[in-house]
Amino acid sequence: MEDGAAGGHTGSETRAARRAILAVCALMVSVLGLAGVVGWTMFVALSTGFREETVIADLPSSDGQYVAALLRVNPGAVDSYHYDVTLRRAGRAASSRDRIVVFVVEEPSPPGVEWTGPRELTVTLHGSHGILKQLTAAGEVVVRYVQEHGVPPGY
Image (tube, rainbow, N blue to C red; front, side, top):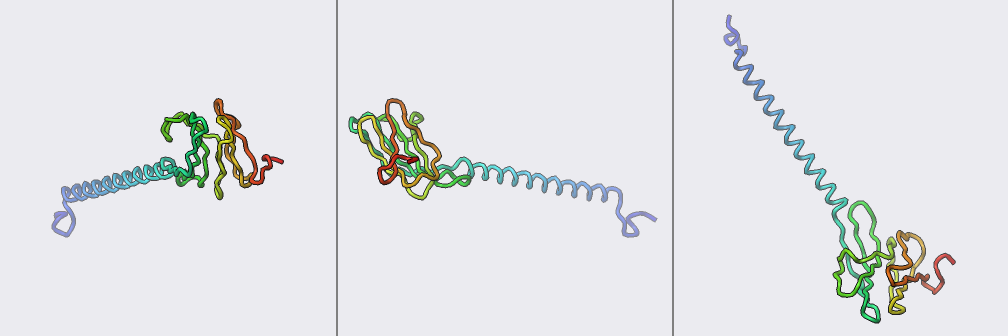
């Protein structure tokens, strides 16, 4: 009795079925691999590549040589909002590489920023928690810090 006559499969039918199953498995592995690559790319882009800066204030120095900026920064999915105080030479773009971040504090409230001389920038703090960066000078500009009521930080 032949294999095919009793409801069985011939050798060529079995080989064709195996090839079809292997092709479907290969396709599924490819689709899953592609989905993994797309998912990983989206995760990396959203967690590290997204950074949004909102300029709250651009403050030129009294002699017009420098600009201090207060920014609210959304660093993306991996960190919390914070405020940056940056310093750059006048005439440079706000996103310029040669701007210097002199102060960083976590939310909830932004620091006060004002020029108290042509080369002196004063940052007023509303509390002393959440400070991530605090420079006292940037080039020829001195950066001073005071608490909200005029008391120097740490006193």
